[in-house]
Image (cartoon, rainbow, N blue to C red; front, side):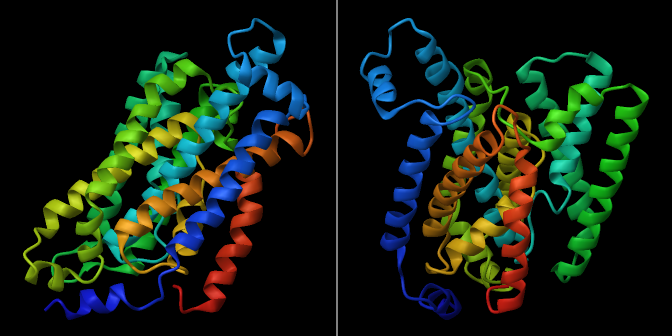
Length: 340
């Protein structure tokens, strides 16, 4: 019964180290440029002077350490969370176009956040995170409850339709609440996606949830590889598929809700990045998950850099840049066929 598992592992030549090395170059370059460029650009000499003497009280240090560094770290964490959540949900559902944003999980978190603004007005970061977790959980329960068939498991068409329906419903309810309670100014930044308001206090509350989610996902990676084969095969290998599925979906909720609380509602990251990694490495989630997180971090670093520098000092919404990049990539994946 282990033969299908072995075939999955050997179906493509491993290029793990080449992929890791390539992503590392773009990651380090993106981090360096993110600290240097923005509404105000600094020379390499100025950047090095701040890094050498980080405790010096100066306006240069304030910009780099208090504004750009937390923003850069947030981009790294959000990219890793969204990409890995997408990879997990694709493995759990065995649906190559599953993504927390496209399946309505992010919309559930967004609706809960808007409802929170309507009820409480201003909110602490911890309350924002709790509401996003609650909304994402409700959306996930509705979507997977509708899509699940007792004998056939998760049917792809039902899952996509349920996700589209719940996403549309929750987005409509969110817009209605925004208009009724006049919350446009409070939620417009979240709806467009952005890291401009990120600070150390926000990271201190939300970042641990993302880090814990990433670590838990890696611990469950081997089980995800088995589950991604086939539910019947997984059960024959002794796996408790329901327990594993619930555990993995809980990790997806943590990662998605934390990312939404930090940056807002974004799509395509969890869809495109996992496919990019799977093109080059074996179908082993012990390899796929860390590389997917690393690639997602690198992608978000560069997207945030473009958003800051394309029209300074104005901020271009993250969702606009991601959609411009993500849609052609998605169409290319569909056209190639063998990766979907």
